[in-house]
Amino acid sequence: MEIKKIKRSEDYSAWYNNLVKQADLAEHSAVKGCMVIKPYGYAIWEKMQTELDRRFKETGHQNAYFPLFIPKSFFSKEASHVDGFAKECAVVTHYRLKNGENNEIVVDEDAKLEEELIVRPTSETIIWNTYRDWITSHRDLPILVNQWANVVRWEMRTRLFLRTTEFLWQEGHTAHATSDEAVAETKQMLEVYADFAENVLAVPVIKGVKTANERFAGAIETYCIEGLMQDGKALQMGTSHFLGQNFAKAFDVKFTSKENKQEYVWATSWGVSTRLMGALIMSHSDDEGLVLPPNLAPIQVVIVPILSKKEDEREAVLAKAKEIQQGLKKRGISVKLDDRENTTPGFKFAEYELKGIPVRIAIGNRDLQNNTVEIARRDTKEKQSMSSIDIEHKVENLLQAIQQNIFQKAMDYRDAHIHVVNTWDEFNDALENKTGFVSAHWDGTTETELKIKELTKATIRCVPLNNKLENGTCVLTGNPSTQRVLFAKAY
RNA sequence: CGGGGUGUAGCGUAGCCUGGUAUCGCGCCACAUUUGGGAUGUGGAGGUCGUAGGUUCGAAUCCUGCCACCCCGACCA
Image 1 (cartoon, rainbow, N blue to C red):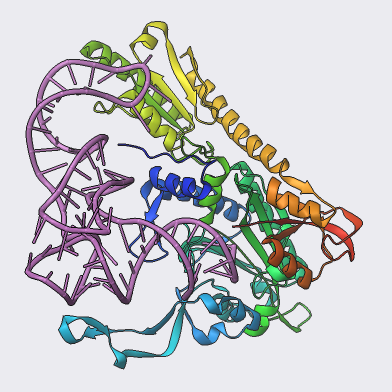
Image 2: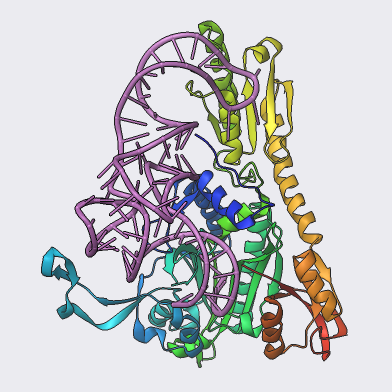
């Protein structure tokens, strides 16, 4: 296999696309804007699901499943919600095909649906319509439900993982008796996302609040985690919304309180998607290929035996390799032993680097003589020969060190790309020449926010949580401001 | 949806201007020799030239429509 390499520094987006294909993560499908997630890419997504799902369960949530189709009338019940999504909805209008002229299959016009169905772009409406029947008393609350699903948003321009017409995600939808409880849930799930991003994906994130302009359609407040990619562009990696009573009012979801009063239910929703795959790739990978954090890698260690042509030597090397594999497996490490004899070790080395396997162990006859193995780490590309005694422990430590190093590297990059500026010139200079986040004063108006977006293409990514309050003047208008916000060009 | 570009074997490509049935590399299959950083040799298989029309004796090549993808804009998780 000839591997096509594109340098990250030369063409970031071509590098990204090439990497997704070469590492066998995903490819374009026959359907516009939709991708095929290939087994290796899906294995990584499954690891994300496993880690997230465990955290959801630990915080008291249960999984459920709601329909793919949403009656159009549901959609229009929450005014800002429909405004936000109307432009990107796929609509089902018929339910039958028939044979037309020339043996073509055509839509049967007689099979028109009385009410069109929207392919869900998100499920708030169908879920709140359902919750109405589930909730009558404060004793029915809270409802803590998550669903793993696919959704469709008809985007003009798509990119593998980052923005596709159909994508996979999870959406949590919770119902609460009080506003405080719903806000606490919203913040709790933001913490879950941040913990996952930093400790599993090894991507440092900034937790914050969206401005009114960037808020989810139908939310009172949108919290988010924002990451910074290696090209200096920001990526929204997850959102958690406090929906207030907006959906409860739209769908008439009331409960009888302890005081025997009828009250509207308080809501949250929160989600992360296969976009995280994009974040993962763009945060760590290099010109050799993918770099996976050990906590996420479907295969954490690959063993490449260096096979001699002498039968007895070959058997001995393979036996030792299997022994190491078993030892590592017992420690809960996922190990692949690549004993293919029709490819050379060098080829395998390159292939597993491309796929981002964190640790590679090479073992040959020479090692057998000396009781050693060669261990190479993907993140730094260092390799060294070491004693094979207590190899399990060494590998365990190394995996931890790699996880830590990848995170620290991303953190250092991120921290070096938060530019604090005070003037419009500095603002533009930072965006154009330094890239990354720009921390600047903003007068708090949507008008100014939009003006800055128009002039620079940068958007307000968030107002960081626990933001320091300080008096200043808006970088564009000079109007008074009480805090800095983070601007960036974003995906 | 607007501007620009691309589409030839699994992948990357030459040929197109100047029309005559497709080039090369990698990969694939077989055998042999190899195997501590992307092996070598010999033989072999594989192509509706994105697609539908048109011009022509003849189209990968010229013309038109359509489709897909990439880059830039508007939009977004």
